[in-house]
Structures are given as C-alpha cells and as structure tokens.
Length: 71
Image (cartoon, rainbow, N blue to C red):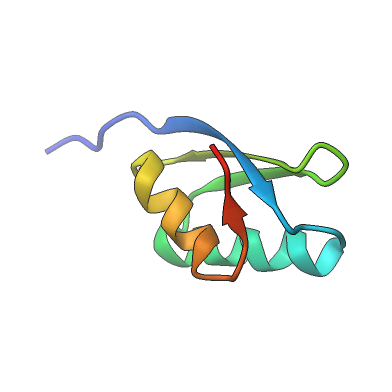
C-alpha cells in the first residue's frame, strides 16, 4: 500500500511571538506526523506545513498548544 502524497497547508496563526513559539508549533505538528516539514514566518504569523495530516488535524495540533488558528 502506498502512502498518499503530502499536502501543504498555509495557516494564519495568532499569538506566536518568539523562537519558543516556533519550536512549540513545530514539535506539536511533528508529534502527529514525524515527517512533517514546518516553516514559520513569525512577522507574518504564518505556518506552512508539508504533511500527511489534514488541514483540520494540523490546525488542531497548533490550537492544542494554545495558539489561535485564524485560517
């Protein structure tokens, strides 16, 4: 059985302000998908993630860390 191709999600996240935030978001996503590739743009409040997770699951992982996912 083949693995589906990873999806790329662009999420607008409120409340990230420092490298600790970047680490927390990255670890939360990688805890649910160890192969997730995460890129965080702090000034823009954007998280780009290439993952097997659905958009909803990726947003939930970030929200579980206490950040507000706006879209």
